Image 1 (cartoon, rainbow, N blue to C red):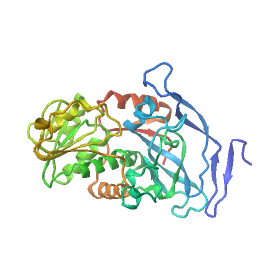
Image 2: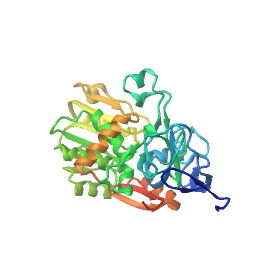
Image 3: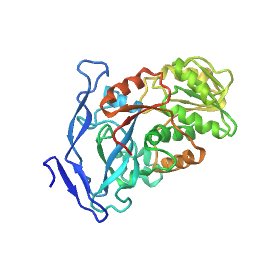
Image 4: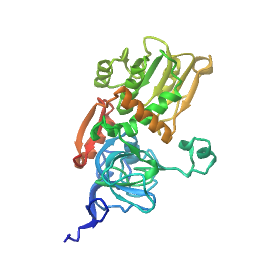
Length: 358
């Protein structure tokens, strides 16, 4: 017999006891992370029920992404009241909703930022689902991974390569995937020179990806510890965010959500170079001078989310090239402290919440 707090889910393989309630964080009212009262609250929520086409995941780990900070502090508009942040999720399937067949109970899967696209708009049909105007996102439009359980449409989840333990795998699901798309958008030539502005969770994975393919990486970031970490990983140089690198760059990626860096980054490019802005949010860009910043066929582009193909390609590369995040582990109950560490901007790698064992 089960208590009124639990129910037993019957399956042909085994029984899974799933609670009806779970511990989770929610954004009560977006605002500064250090405000009193805090915009975040550690509370109790009902365990979600998977809808048609969805699976229920018992969360093992959830990475802490800068986008979670934008959701919490209100840099992004509210899409769901009292949303639970988090979108770098690794866990095990514990229940299949109606019409699902992709995963077996107990399978370890990854739940990413991109939760759903319509599949019928002009962008989806053109293979550009990251631009779908109807798209939905984990931890923004739907409760995410700062919790014990989450649901995900089975077609938008990833299988996790066996090489990676769950804590290490979590940052790959956004920091890694978005970093990969930014790397592709930056048009880095073979054997070229790449500048990375900001050096947190995403940039330190992009640096590994680039260097493993013979790219020379130059890091520009405000944090002293982050600069030292970049050199430890093999970066050719590491300087301040507003400094010029010691050589001209073929390509650059801005991860810091700071528009003021754009003129310096464009100035650092060779003729024909490309600058990609990887963030979902940035402060406004200052005035640019055509001759100094844009002339000589320099390219400035943004990066919006990712396609599922990006995710599959990156996870395959991460497995083959043995790309591993440097992680800092926090318990679920201290997710607010992890976010404050991310906000400080001098992070060595990525923060990951340990939710359960697995």
